[in-house]
Length: 201
Image 1: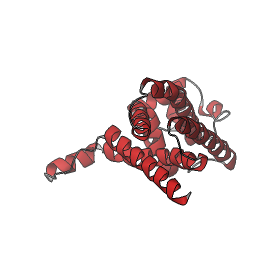
Image 2: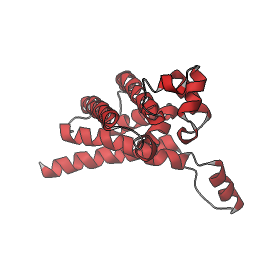
Image 3: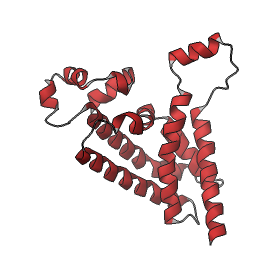
Image 4: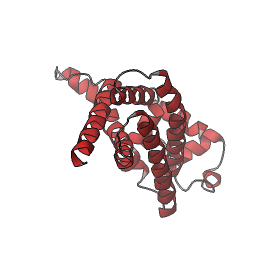
């Protein structure tokens, strides 16, 4: 896991092979395959660890910022704490398109169960902060958070080729500040969920 994280800091997931990862840890690829069926399985495990690590720090972060509108506060804390974790953001952004493509049903089942458990933990933490948010609404918000990160992160971190094209064409493209955009989007999501629940009940 440490080697995979170190390699991800140097290259994108799509550029890292299981053979290269095996070489980095000093093992034959066949030995690594005894524990992980593919490169994707390694990075799904790393993603699960990164999500669990993030969730362990959230309660303390919420406690440090206990003033202001609850929805805005939750959104700001979550956005700031996610933005600090580039590895987490990178892995979330390639989950559906890359990491879930070359795995067995067993690995997919294990990952989806871990994801569902993480959503439940996050939903519980958010409900503690936002009065009036239903269990269903909180779970929806938790799942949507990861989807928003998956969409925003690549746009906030364009490739060198895209940056060069923007500069060459002299395009007036506003810089996407990931943390600010994520915070605004999460706050809007929470406000919308609360408003909808008030209307429905």
